[in-house]
Image (cartoon, rainbow over all chains, first blue to last red; front, side, top):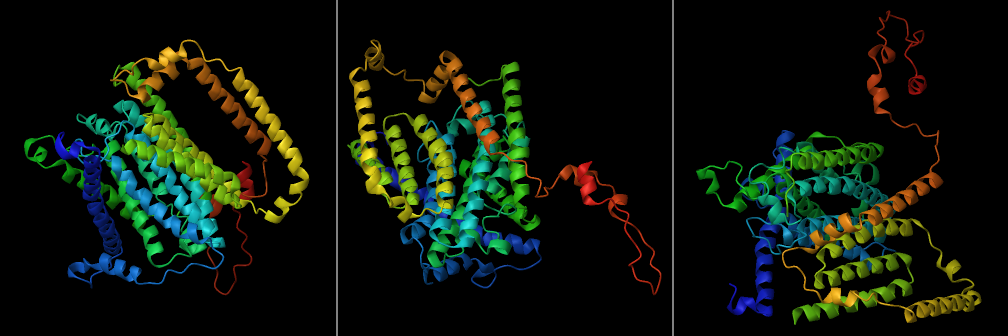
Amino acid sequence: MDTGFFATDFGILILTLLKSLALIVPLLIGVAYLTYAERKVLAAMQLRRGPNVIGPFGLWQPFADAIKMLFKETIIPDGSNRLLFLFAPIITFGLAIIAWAVIPVNDHWAIANINVGMLYLFAISSLGVYGVIIAGWASNSKFAFLGAMRSAAQMVSYEVSIGLVILSVLVCAGSLNLNTIVLAQRHIWFAIPLLPMLVVFFISGLAETNRAPFDLPEGESEIVAGFMVEYSAMSFALFFLGEYANMILMSGMTTILFLGGWLSPIPFIPFTWVPGPIWFILKVAACLFVFLWVRATLPRFRYDQLMQLGWKVFLPFSLAWLVLTASVLEIFGWLPHA
Amino acid sequence: MIPDIAFYVFAGILLASACMVITARNPVHSVLFLILAFINAAALFVLAGAEFLAMVLVVVYVGAVAVLFLFVVMMLDVDFAALREGFQRYAPLGLTIGFILMVEIGLTAIDWKIAPGARLAGLAPMPADISNTTALGDLIYTSYMFVFELTALLLLVAMVGAIVLTHNDRHGPRRQNIHIQHDRRIDETLTMVTMKLGEGSHQITPHAVPDREIAQR
């Protein structure tokens, strides 16, 4: 592959496009079926049946929903900023997709295996707030704006603790490269020595993706549907799918940082024969199940509780744990040398 | 070829959006163009091989600073008519100040001396096995440790100053204190009463400690 057509500039472009396609198509199918899985899991937990009419076990439901959304009318409210109004859902969905460019699903199986992969992921996830803010502002509606304000404060607050959690993993792995971070977990997953950080990361991830119990930006009982009040048809669908794509991304990040990425959980022969991507998908699915489980279990947080948890509990705790991790690594001479 | 095209595309968008920042009529649009300019600058950093700086630019400026900026600008109800009022009266003064600033910058630029070793240092080959993240870390946390800590201290002082200036201890809103809630015993909140038939509950006054009193303990 290093010679011939795929070594030329144009060839690399084509190759990258093909790789992106190979990643995005399964990802989009995953997003579609995550909406189905959420309805089925919630139904099972609430002793209902969930979608079961369209296709066997209701399996065609996501496609039926997509077709329905496509044929609905896109309503642009009076006095809204048209361009930004239509741009906001595209930002949300686009950002959820482009973050996958650096995620390795197997050894060196990433579209771009860059040196600063973790920073790239962090940067992209910190941009996610723009879709919500722009949507809230461009809608020219009170409820939408309130939702956007809440979301901006919430996402900025929880990013701080996410950053510190990521730092404590990076100290252990000694690299910003996602491939190296996963390979550093060959002997022991970071989930075991850094278990409290995994919990903090996951909860912050819930807040970052605006999922229950931190779905205050939507808060349908107080501010109707928050920032997406005014959205309909495909623009609404993009927000909706963006939320699920973000959940998958957050689960992917959890898998890479703490659960050993594509590595087999049991290092014996029959299990190491299973290809890496299968393990990766299974781990992501397990994280996603917890996302859904939390939604079915916990009531929504009050806003001051949310802020208190972010700033007064997670921030000092993750800072202390980072110092502890670094000190232990230094004292025992376990610091990785990159 | 492709990196060249990418450079001109990103540089073009960067310049165009930088101009739009100061010419856009709506302040929210200005901030959004500023964000676009930041992102394109980050892309130029990537093309120059400084991927760490690029990512930090996005994380710090776009992900944190510009969000707060946008937040504030959206909350402000800007009256455009009032902003344009007196434009002609202040225009000469503004132009004068701008001109003086330009002359000052020009004077500095004339007297600018490049350090003698800088050109040679720039020509030195990049060490192949060290990523620029590692190189930056090595420099900042060894040679420039003191300067780095001092900068951090300055930022801390600015932060403390801002908090001191804007903080006011309001007594109006009652905040939830989880410790007080957990410390409360059953007999402070609950009274068991045996009701007699035919009599209302109006005689019973709960001797529970009121919330206010608990809050003061």
